[in-house]
Length: 229
Image (cartoon, rainbow, N blue to C red):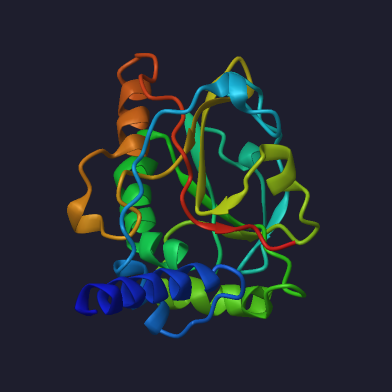
């Protein structure tokens, strides 16, 4: 009986965490729920199985989206950049919230080296009321974002890229005036706990590009909440 109750309790915690991805709340209890989820196993993805959005080697479209300070931002604004870390994220998903400090750290680590981070919120606020532009402005201030946090108001850019989760990473490199996709997937191998990260997929990929090497792990599975449309 004790084992049965223990199993039921664990299942309830998992159900709570994943149900939050349907209508995320800013309640801190969601963060606690995520911390109880068994960390998924990360495996490299075969790009041949991907059918929607960009794949490795594709040219990524530029965009012109509104930042939380009201400024319109495009990739073409960054004349001296070597590439970009584009992360689709949102205000409320527990996985996105757990990644915020890592995103700030990545921007600090790589912006000066030519790879600035740009965050984009793809969620429809009519479906997810906590992802309005006004609340994005509050989020950027509270989380100390050092990078643009853009609003995909038409919900078209995320679709072109093929983002399905928040967070979902696309690493781009400038080549011949084009922004070429070099890595797609997760920031690292432990979305719920930064202290237990063993493989920094995104950082490793950027460093390989900086060293003039080919990215060794090109795709991993993005773990997060579904984009709300």
